Length: 437
Image (cartoon, rainbow, N blue to C red; front, side, top):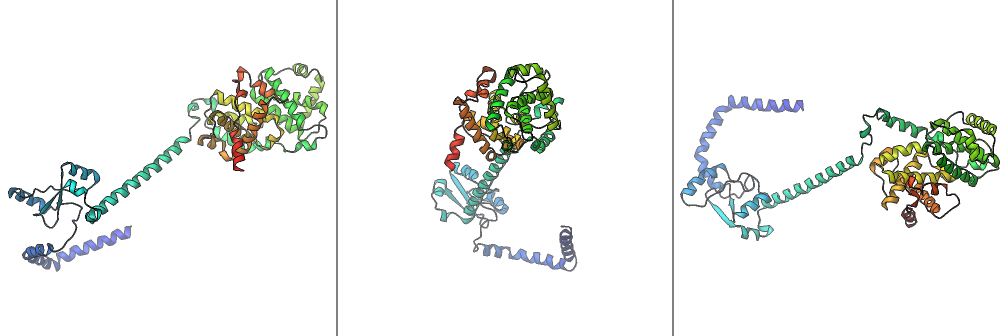
């Protein structure tokens, strides 16, 4: 750009110098000679049909002559200094007259009645008027498209909500680090997962027995009024232990009771005593057996209790979904149904939590619901959740049909849990799969 500006500056400077030197006399003489030819040029111009330099504009020369025209009782000329638009044309039509002035014939004017002008065909309208109207319509169309794009961008920006804005002043919410914390959870959640076929290594227990054990522990957890995170950690400890340690069926309940004891020590403020756990298991084991199993489990798991369970992700994802109490209870009901099912071990904890909330939202609304905010904080889109969600709907249907493993169903059929289990399953999620197939 600098070179272009210098180059144009040189051209202007050289032209000025040429006019001031040898060309000055010639230029002055030329202008003087043209004074005698003005009348001849104007006469020639009458024979040339040229559109005005600006649509429906009047030259200043014509404006100066309008006083003389008025004095001679000729047609008054309305000076126009702006382009003809639809709005301006409507204003002229309201006056019932349209004044058309020629740039080269200021003394002549034609008055066209507005009604007659409306009836003129398109091919009779001057080309420059048609082009101006077409240009204005194109500008309007482009403006409408730009406005629509702006609205879409604003909607996209508004769809992603800052879910931590209300906790900015709460130091316990650690809003400065919350995204990093959950990024770490997502990165390390594989450490809490177990092989989906670990039961094949067990010689005396099977998937059905595992389901019975966890269904019973859900009732124990409810009876002791323990914290929610204790239940999820209990199930995680059981699966991780059974994935590496063979257990006979007579000791399976002991594994479950001991896992709950360890989870209580890790999560609870007030921990149930060993005698309470022995009593609730119908005194099937002694205190020493519980303590021995506790040592075996913590050594087998290498004292690793800090693993991200589905509950950790549920808290964050429910906040992203802007949940109320009804959605929260229904989401927990659905995900606790999954704790009993062995086949759900193939899904990572974060996906289970996101799918449970998606299924609960769809159940309450009667349609698929998954916001941009939820997608942003879970890192799962709707299509990634559908497979898991459909399995959850099938478990919801089975729970309502009066199956044997009904611990979760009875727990969430109480007023304390908002009768969440009485909600009708979102069967349309399964029907959609059948229709697509």
